[in-house]
Image 1 (tube, helix red, strand yellow):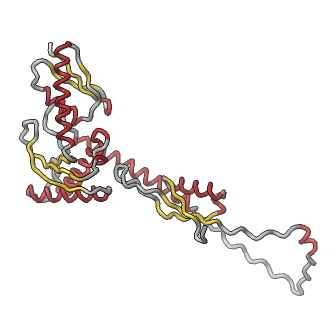
Image 2: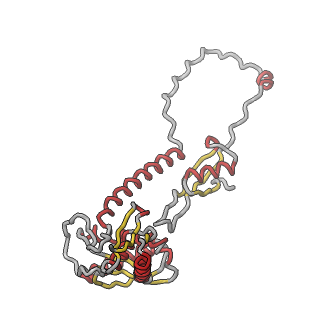
Image 3: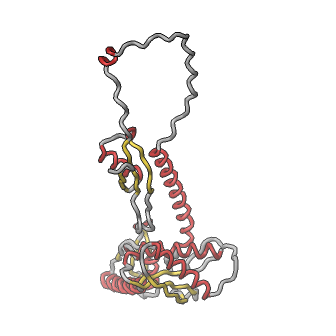
Amino acid sequence: MSDRGSEYTGKSVDEAIADGLAALRLNRDQVEIEIVSRGSRGIFGLGSEPARVRITPRPAPPAKPSASAKAATPPAPAPAAAAQPAPAPAPSRPAPQEPVAAARDEERAEERAEESAEERDEAWDAGWDEEEAGAEPSAPRPLEPMADVGDEELAAMAAEMLAEMVRLMGFEAQVTTEWQDDDDDSGERFLLLELQGRELGALIGRRGETLSAIQYLVRLMVNQRLRQWKNIVVDVEHYKERRVAQLTQLAQRMADQVVASGRAVSLEPMPANERRIVHIALRDHPSVYTQSSGEGDRRKVHIVAKS
């Protein structure tokens, strides 16, 4: 261990300090603590870094003389002059806040700020939910446009934002852009941003959850800059195209089963955009219809025979 102390890491500053004190077998009053890095949670759990602290043991105080040593010491001669009055004690100052306590307070403040931001994001995201029955995606409340932006300029802006986000997440990918028409006969065009590269599966996540979060952030950044709603879709290596084909085949297969047995079939819980694919796939079916039930992550589609 150097004169500057030793560094310890943990998921949080408090955890790093606890590990360091346990390793040194000291308590907080016996050490100096320096916060080197508070760490980072990364983006969607990727690129996170642990918190780091440097702990330096304080030098031991000088040993107090024993009682026998005090007895052997001859008494000091009395001063010739009267003793000067002792100076008045300096007014006591409150002890500075311990670095650990200050770090804990800051972490709690950051957590409260993150919780507030999550609540605002959830309220904002409510306006982006896609209708399940095949209607056009609902948009947030109208924003005042800042300027007219052409298709090429919008595509370049969105592609640059997405590429920078992916780079900061630690991935190398190329972004291609293409304007397409929606698949529900609404005639609305949307901008497709396709990510292509190697080992990009982590950008998709479980059942596309990470990809949906990336798409939401790109939409939010673009729409906040333009102050108007633009329909932007983000995909990775044609994942969504393959998923649409899989869900469409599943819907047709389950519909045939319902027709043959006369009994309704319930699919596994799905996010709103995947439930919408099933609804669209069977909306013109002559013998079955679809409906959804449940709340939140447990909401699912039921395929029911027409009477």
